[in-house]
Length: 271
Image 1 (cartoon, one colour):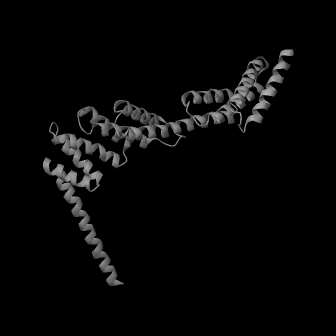
Image 2 (cartoon, helix red, strand yellow):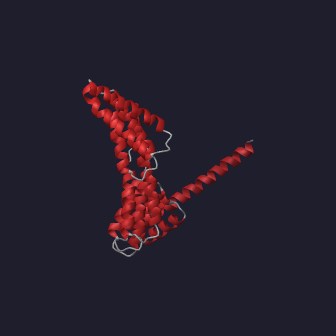
Image 3 (cartoon, one colour):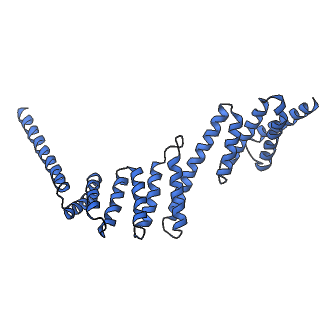
């Protein structure tokens, strides 16, 4: 046991010396004030995928190589170090700044794509705020418009569709929540806006179903003075649904809404 303990301590000491030496080498380069050495070592760390260290050295190299031809490569890799370390807000910022600073660079199209893609990485679950989702959509759309023949256009369109599905899902869940909370007018407005904002939706039938149900329940829970107007709306929605979806699983319920609304309207008008 004593021998094992002594060996373990020796091994630990050896590893600590090794780690200290590596750190000292990095610090030695970082504080060397030697631009060529800093740049060369930064590239070595970058190729070795040690992006945090590469980032520190590339930042120093940026100042030393400002105005020189190497600055373009340094800045581009610097932006990527933020992406690779999942600092997507800063990655998006630096890719955008690269594109503006080096507008004629051969890397500009990639930088423009990566600006949008960094925002794509920030897009959260549909339940949360979708600001970065919209930023990513806007970025990809701008890319498609700016570089219509680029090989990345197909991917941009695919990602736009994916992100729009997320926005659509959020809108649907918000409208459904209004329905569950019995805020029927808000549910109708939100469902209606969903159809306007996402005319390509695959869920139009279900959306119109919930709209008709919300309109009917709103009419039922309205004061007498508003019931004629609102039962008319519910009846119209049910009729339009039946005409549009002839084989829908919701047809029976829509017929019930249509029939009851028509009867209710006759009763109200006979008063």
